Length: 413
Image (tube, rainbow, N blue to C red; front, side, top):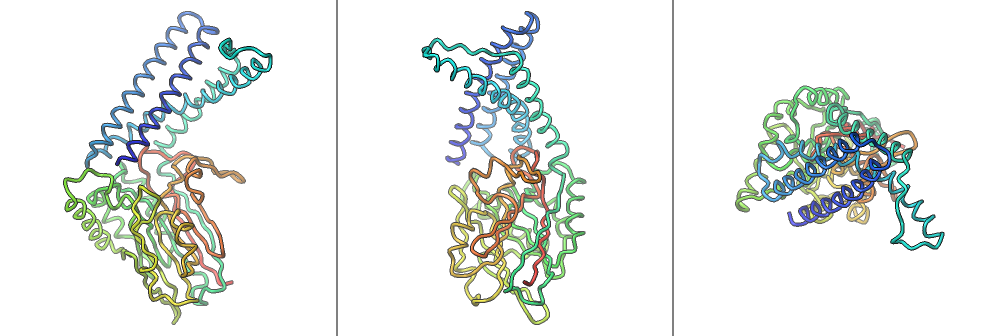
């Protein structure tokens, strides 16, 4: 809780600086280029947005401190409203900062003192910045209205000479980060689940974060998730949110009771929850191992995953598929481990729920914290696939990084 609160306060400080800088720039632009009436109206609207953002951030911090089971019903929309106001300002600020940097460079190169520097605030640059600021605003709106339910199927193949012949062409369908407590609509989610089921998986896996924090969040979705099936079964693991560790519980007993309730719900939905253990998937007299660990992530996330315990009994040369919620586990513990995990399936990052994915271009701000944040990665002959998440948490939107269902085909080399 302390680290999350500190992070929130740092973000608040950053946006206060943005508000100050962009506000000064906008004021100078209005003074130089707008008529008196337009200038007055523009400044009034900007000041209203200043106070609104600060008020919303303050409410958000209070909600983070006194978080309870009702918080997720309204805080995501609070965050969405903040983003709709802040991102356009940040975009405008980038253009102004670029202009100021060039002007300041020219000023210094002429041997003038810094205190004598006055921004030029050319009309053309400011207008381009204002027009460009409409893009993030419309992106947030689209992300809330449609993007969060724009389910996309990503298909890939894993080729290995160590794969048993019987599993050549074996299809694994993965989904992750359902975050059932975030959904406020039913029909769009059901369409996503229908798309998932239609892929004809041999094996269905869920890689953690069934809820935001509270086990009861999934209860309305249990009939629908129970309907998912695959010939070789459906398996799940726990994600960081499933432990409910960010909630201010009355005591440890309440926290543990919530976790045990979620475990029962997963069983009732037909998921075989793997808790630092493995199971053999058998076909035509041959087998592969499906290993599932509890969450292991960077601090402050839980580090309950135990690869030694989970892989105890696995023999050298067997083909292994590992389910581990947080992709940071891969480089930190999975690759150095004595057991060879041919394929690791993770989620967790959501691709930050914002970014750009175009042919030849794949970017999200989350990449600066998670080197493996979306899609397929390979190192030392082992593969990691990071699912972008089926649901969402925080802001109720997806902007450029759409909710994902993954279809992986195993192939014999």
